[in-house]
Structure formats: C-alpha cells, structure tokens
Amino acid sequence: SKFRAICKSSLLDQEAQTVPAPKGMIVVSPKIIAGITANFELQTKDYINKMEWNFGDHRKDYALTVNHVYATIGKMEVTVVYSDGIREGQESKTIVVEANQKPTILTFTCMDGSQVDKSLPFSATAKDPENTELKYTWDFGDTEYGDGQNVRHFYKEGGDFVVKVAVSDG
Image (cartoon, rainbow, N blue to C red):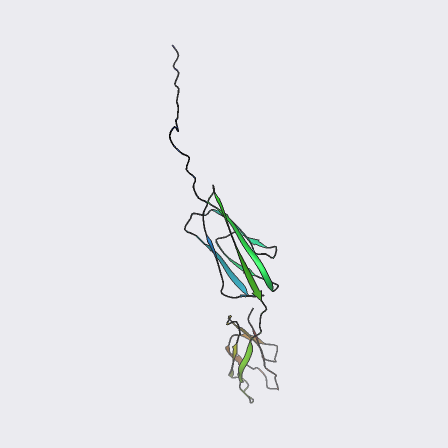
C-alpha cells in the first residue's frame, strides 16, 4: 500500500502585508572643514546589516558611524544606502565643506639665559577659528624636538639656540 500526503496552504481572505523600508537620518559634525575629520552617522531605530556611504568626493565607507576627511571645499551630496537584509532605505544630505582657517599663536614663552644641564620650560597658547584640537610641535634649535602645549627641554651644551613652535589643527 502507498501513502500519499497532500499539504495545502491557503491565503484566502488575507491581504499581503507591505513592510515599510527602514528609515534613518544622517547626522553630521556641526561644521565640515577641509582637512579636518568630520563625523557621519546614520541614526535609525531599525536593524541595519549593510550600509554604503558615498561622500560626494568619489570615496565610500561601510559602517554605521564613519569619519571622513574632505580634501576640497564646496557643496557635497552625502548619500547612504542601507538595508536590513530584505528591504533597502536611502538618505541624502547636502553639506558645505569650508576652508580651514589656520590657528593663531597668542603667547609663546621660553626661558632666556645660559642654563646648561637644567630642564627649561617652554609654553605656547593658540586659538583656532573652528575650535578644533590643536597640536603643538617644538624645535629647540639643537636638533631636538618636542610635542605639547607645555614642554620642558634639557640643553646639553651652551650656545645660542633659536626656539620655534608650530601649531596645527589638522
């Protein structure tokens, strides 16, 4: 004897349900400056397992939160395409990349005199128009260098040395 099972499924009187695509919003750094790292994030309540950012400068990234540095100024169209594995969403935002304004050194303090074999203090303060983090680089004039806003240096020999400090924001 043979056994035969017949399985039937019925969707009678049921309407197919459409599930909406995931939704999100692009959030960016308050000010986008050429040469300075900008932060981009897709804020969403939906589950996302795949993303592709296009920053408008022929470069891409694939994370929920990304850092990007623009080399040129101007208007850029930032687009992110994202998916939950089934449905796809897309968001776009026009941003303006501004020119970087260089920081200004406000104070520069160094110790004068002939103090060989002693650690001497050096300090500088600077202001950046975009309020980005500043990096201080020192040239002590004796082939030695240092980093930081406030530094100390030990001269091994006497002599005349020109001390320089450079401040950058990028």
